[in-house]
Image 1 (cartoon, helix red, strand yellow):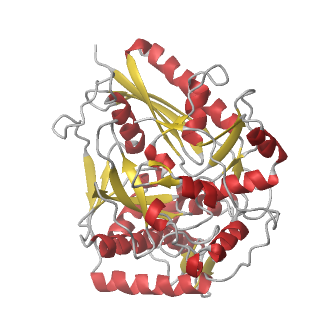
Image 2 (cartoon, rainbow, N blue to C red):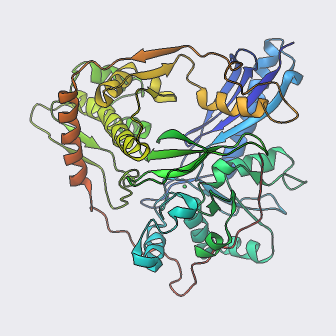
Image 3 (cartoon, one colour):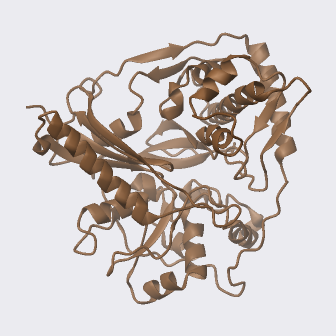
Length: 474
């Protein structure tokens, strides 16, 4: 009987559990549950840690039920991998197992005043002061400043830290701790790829950095840069891509993060009522095939790479009396493509190796119009796998290749082949460059709209972080 490997894919908007055939990478069973977000104040984004875990449990239960219906023995599942929204931050009580506050989501902006004070304390007020250690700029995006906010503003967190009961982690840590026993001996662990997004982790020594722990969570594009970290001069992050084994080398990546990608479609559906379902956006945009000179910058939570500008806000410009909702739908899809091009241009400059194709995955890749637009705007082919769950597959492969499991070989010749479809550019580079230049003009008009309110952090309190114990899994 062929071995199976499972993956828990806990994202910002949903949780999925998938079971793969370890030989063919075929999805045998899967289940998905949506996750609700709350917005207590403008710029704040939270999720309920208990709802996250309940969604994981439900997905596991339903996935196993489907395996049983298929007459598949659950004991054939040899390992479980976890992939997750990375910078989202939680603190919980090791004694009771209760979360001490909601999870603060990666795109939350409440820590902007803390970030500004940290930057002012840095030599030369340089936001990249810690980049030589972390690969990251000082930003609201990462976990350290979210933890600082929790320590400053939540009495239960401070008390739990004082009494040694607090556990801190990203979503993977919360899931692993609960699945391995919780308060009855649960394993408090993370991996280096998640740790590298906390702004507390030294990406060279591959350890929590004492200096960092004293000092002071979309669309995500990564370019593998090999075993040496490449520091970006063009607004990208230097991050840990993976480390597949205790004695295996660490591989690094350049990464660009877009705060609002698929969420722009949700905004058009939920906030503006333009469509009933997300899939209708493609049909609406395809009816006109152009934005008619309309440009949409969805900077709802500021702009991430390559600008790192939290004061930016969303803007729609270039409107005329002929503009209608179909043009807005097209402009929204184009916005995803323009943001992707900004990041790829930065990657090309930092790496010195121009990309010749872009490989994509995720829910938005089912939108054929978007894939074609992406190829047109980038002027390179876009390759889409026929099986869109490659994020979960990667987690499953890593779990299946773990020491003691060994049901999946990481040798390129032994990995399963995934069929793909290629979208070739259909417009000339001059047209692409013209549209991109207009987009960049719109971006400049979106800058400096918002002045962040001062956070409730005590002004007299030292901006120091106490690192709650965690360990790494390879």
